[in-house]
Image (cartoon, rainbow, N blue to C red; front, top):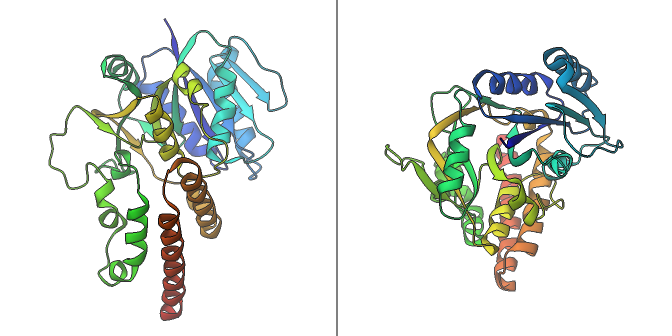
Length: 319
């Protein structure tokens, strides 16, 4: 029986990574292999802590390799790849995916954030749905928030348009005065937000959930895996645009659930760095994947400048 490679990226967060693996081991019944990638952690503890856990938990089925090692053929049950640098979400995951290329036992990939916890056996049902849904490229479960009491609305989204960015930029003062939540601001893109249950069992979505998604290995290879030009953010938008050219779509399985603890790794990064990465990724996405006229891109730049000015104004008001 073919296996699913579970790709997990770690950066300065060994506790969540270990908890994620333990949760999969507890609930999963599908044949899998793990590829854990340490994305150049700088905390000094990630690599030794994860290595100690994996070597103790999986013994003979575990292998630790460095980025410079030549790895090919059939992988161990668990492979831990230590990267020399932090290359972001896309390239970090691509390094793990590359290890699976020559393993004929693997036919699917599950891209899994290290802050995801399994609470039920989702992989077998996701695989069955993926094989039966029309033109299904990527399928994800419903993500619950960190408390497990509500839905992470970002798990079912439409693609963001330039018009939406422009509108939200110019309306930022209004949103601030009305104390709008981020979910209310982007509600037009959130397919499940304030929608009554029961949801459709399998619902088409545009943006797959990068936190937990299942894809066939050959489909991902056909689109070149993740675009390595982004460091953080807009990876899902790019996947949607790539798959659209192949006339393939994405789905969410609303009856299958896991918990998304929520941006624990990103919370440790300075907000300025995160904002710069998001801006650079969006700029690349607009230039490369959106066939938009020059005047739309110009209007977006003007609205960005307006937003930046408003953010500066808010900082003065708070002082």
